[in-house]
Length: 144
Image (cartoon, rainbow, N blue to C red; front, top):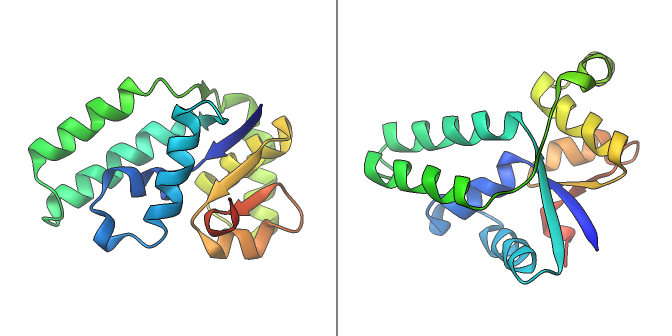
């Protein structure tokens, strides 16, 4: 079975109103495939921090209510998506971030993809355009 790493740009489309989220249909399709057992999903442990931040910002901007944000946190936790520790990836993430002028957050996802051989699925086209030819980074819009 194929395992995909998903980043917060993909999961945000699961928890934010779809009318404001390009590629929401593709993200939902990937999620459904995981529920149905067609693919497995995994995330680095920093994913949970990023998702909490996304929901905090969405509530602060009025996109969702604080109560909705709390419910979506609870729902995300209930998914039991395996989390991979990032501490062992620090040196490689630093190298990727420095070499390719990317954030440390992006670099940890990429380092994890490279170390596992799993494709990182992202809605961040800039990340794909910058690193997709060197690392297993794939754009959400190209996943079927």
